[in-house]
Image 1 (tube, rainbow, N blue to C red):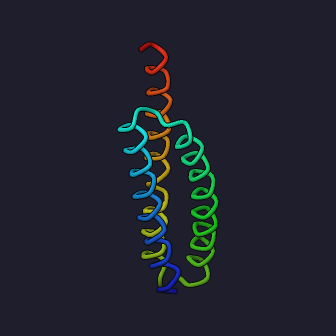
Image 2: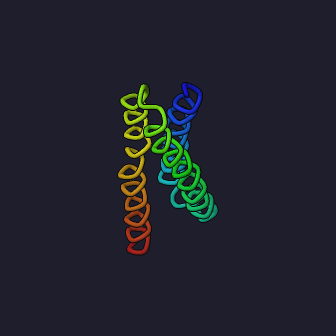
Length: 102
């Protein structure tokens, strides 16, 4: 059980770090077009990996009630990436709109 919890926390942190680095590079280097494709591909891959881990955690919370609190905290960590990813997505859209005006 500890393995899935640790794996989920590492995955959530890795998704956040990679997404943040991609956004920073994209904004710093003035809208690299290839990076848009890489970023959107990363979002799709990270979404599915995190979703699979979330489903496993939710099932584990019912199967292993002893670890329920820790599992639910880990679910919350995974779910925190959603508003962050949405915010990053809107930043990219905003930067695309701004680049049209200059």
